[in-house]
Image (cartoon, rainbow, N blue to C red):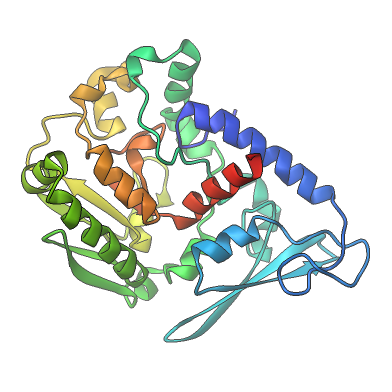
Length: 324
């Protein structure tokens, strides 16, 4: 059983759609792509992966060039952008995993970089969970699941955020003031965070819930932190400096699934929303519209956590457009 991070309904629907699309894409034959749009001159060459357009939209400053490798029967994706000097790296598509050639033999360890994220949706009331949903949460929270299940590969993210090592990422981070608090983030986040801040400060003027949260329920922010995720021995997105945690003045409500599990045991997922610390949805919506996801929508929820993942929001839009 494979577990995804997000809400059960989104997991079942989105994973099925992605699996069906990947199978269809893998067997379609067309002409060789010439300008990244699927046109070609040679016969019997698969069409460039359609999802590559998602990355082009999410990371508009990066050039993605696709070349079909007939020997390995997969697409080579060369990503190029400027970060001081020009920087390039080549990945294999590998059913949207984006792996270096050396990792193709280990592809079963990895998920697609595209995950279903329930954009714009509110969290389901735990009192309405079915037994099947409770079991999905329980399974997602097992130590064996978290350690042994396939996970999102970091190779592509390490490239664009210069985070393959602590030394390199710390050459590409900045400490900024965001919503009145100091926080250290990847240089690529400075612009999207400025857009979020501008909108939230304007919203604060007319939205008392958002104003009260920012003025009374937010004590400080935590961003860059070179570390592994506890209990899984894998690098956290805080190490890439694209994640920010919102911390309250007092930890008197549930805000992180593992802390709740330590207190409540196997029924941790049933803690009422009224007993959880969480930002207001109006604030969450602004973050999402600017390319961030909120950890409160994960199966193993992390209500303090925001993460810059514009490719997931573009994936959501792309999938919805295809279903119209």
